[in-house]
Image (cartoon, rainbow over all chains, first blue to last red; front, side, top):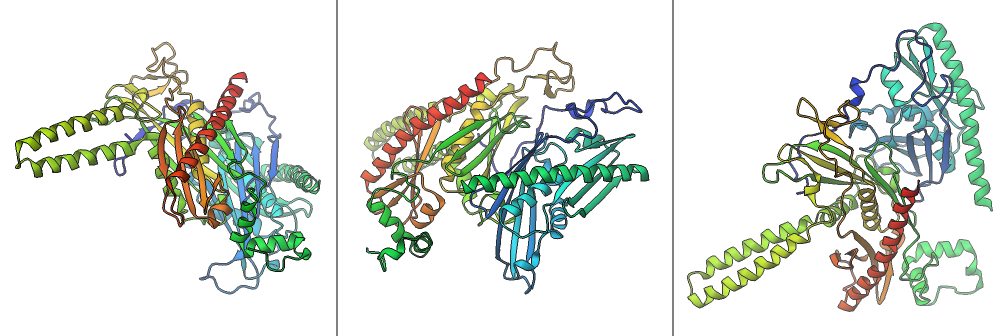
Length: 256
Length: 349
């Protein structure tokens, strides 16, 4: 018996654990350790690789902990016929999730805003005037969601753009910080994100020290904001270096 | 078939590339005459194939399969459902094939690729052999109509008909025994109350020809990697994971059934036909230039599961089909070995 169309049975996951587990952070308990044993101000090790998809003009794969993302760039290619004439190029972004990305099947479609946020984060870094009348498509697929998905997508997308040879002022690196009680934790995992009181995401061009996007949500105090931003900027700097090494490696490998 | 302006200056790489784009068919025919393909493969050889099991940690079973640069990621998530009244002790498998916009320049978001539903249907037919059931009901209906139309005529006919019906029924029973690579009864948890629904989702990450072959390989690999969690019945009558709910003392519902038995694993090979040539495992370029494809699916004991030739400009002779099947038989052995190596590699870890 296959799944008959129109009569899909109602199913549920036997994994109910998440809701019943006590919050990982209680009051002022400073001895608390993060689920993966990192320090509060320590990012997950980042792995980047360009050229993941052969049929695309440029692509990149990023893996931070269990967050796995693949981004393909197509173009510059002809804009849709319905588009108005434009002296500058257009950027078109789309972020989607696989059905098995989230612990509960099919929850990835909740992130509808990610596509436009990715667009806004990259827009400022790309020299759009170098490809007039055409469109560059940036498509991202989250293979597995392990927390801090959007920052990973943004960093990975800028790497894919570089791989495609699209002119940019600088690479774009993105990092997020979660506020859990009195603590700031950088690069939060899914579990931490579900208990956070507030979150901050910063995307910047590290070599130019310019911010392309900055978002706050939830409860924040001014000193916390300052500290969190400084944390993010430092982390972006380091992430930018990792991304740059990845590009250099790819370039030297192709020369050989 | 000489090249236009076949003097020495055509040998530069740029001009070869231009020739390839302008006269793709002639470019290929030049190669075929030498029994070689532009990527240096002989005609009957498939591209390099790799399988990585357990690529997705959030799924119960997963695999990444690569044939050349065509890449497929398959993952299985197990959920619990109430089985239908007709089949109270059977689970269910839902197969979905996705071509996200990242995989190919021709797929745009919001507009699903044309090839995706075709591959999805072929996959579920192959894995579930559901087509069998449809064919059976059609045959039954035809016989029924035939009997009705003849029943008014002589009794001699009637005797003959009974013979024929008996024969057909025998065939149908035999069909039943060879149903699918997975016995859905193995997915039952509590008869009539709960059974597994296996959601198999296959994502195409990079599309470069032979989509069905790669998708089937990743699906088969994901099933062989699948590990069913231990579950028990809680007080509300729901099925939950034993360890997480502190129900370890309670008898699990599925103590013995942690792995699914795969009987007769299907493997496939797609070939492109062009004139008298047969090219195994085509790339996307080859598929677009020479549009007649034949997909053969054989199971691990080399029995024919399905054969698919969706039209095309080349009309195949029986001998061409037989050659395709012979190529597939070789390929099945290769694929079996690759899958076995991937599985034994997992066990060492």
